[in-house]
Length: 486
Image 1 (cartoon, one colour):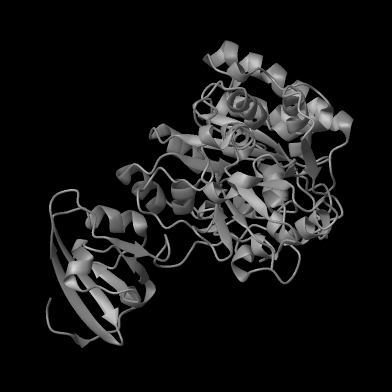
Image 2 (spheres, rainbow, N blue to C red):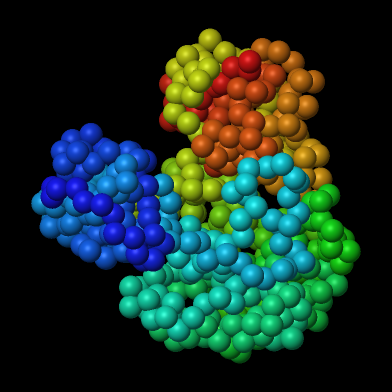
């Protein structure tokens, strides 16, 4: 380590700063004396824009770190074996500024959030780096030639792109951004450079459904047949939406979407040898139609976007899979060490205050069980539980009054609604809560399981975990926890 010196201010240094939040004991960083709270301002003399660059630069055997501590710049020279991580946990995946979204989509769910929630929840990003790291969808309206060069050069693949419509005028109308008309040229450029891209179409009734949806699927086949896949998902409308055109689908509209997607799967299958386009599970529930067979979804590559989740859960629950299928929430496979933020943060906090491990629940394993879930989850679980022939297991449906509207997925359950529902449930029963509605041990409304009027057992959101939570403890692998209400 060199002697400290006063920090020389520069725009680059000021714009690209990341804070160390933890240092692994015994790691190279720990042995050098790097501390939580230190700010990384450069690696090998270069300001670093994000965790992607940071990981590449710090993977070398010789690394020079410029850190800011208490107003002084410190330089640490690190020597480590090849492949050995520094042992530093960073506070953010982006060190400069998150590229925010300048679209004004009528259907944007962030505009529909209730007031008073955590400030970070209101941030709209349109950053291709977060698309690569966490699977966030980008519209490409802020994408540039320099971004394309970096994505191609560094192989930042896969990316996730919001399409919504291939008609330029309709896409401009939906995104309320004149750049939307031409921004899909970047999608073509990405595909031309062999970047894998997953697409998404949010269908808004009366806007891009009907003939417009058919036109979009035709446009995908004509212009972007090398997309990995395309998810067709329904519009979510909360009670806080101020857009008069935005409304939930009718059953007939949902049925049209399902039938259209099913028909176009056959077109894609004949033209390019794969189905390409898939309707979200919600559409089948809204339409009252059966889900496609599990084989339709291949490797469940869009599992996290609501495509094939019901069939995957069914396979897991009935023992057709040893582990959870598809991309599981909380994991980011692209860059090892990327900070777990937002919905990709750990679902629970280990040994949280007031918590108990599953081993401590042994005396209660014979108690009646209530499975907490949203309205859609209840429709998926009901036929599965009916195969158990057990009278001690029931579904506790949680109506989402916090968001209101047509919001019915388990992932958006909040503490306030759970409090209301659980207060009416019997004392002494076991209540299983899927971890998908938690981020770092908190619900979206800021409450925690400790605020609930009944103890809950938090289990992973997959059929394997649910099946094993209902089995004798000796056969259970689930690392769930119970948190006592205060």
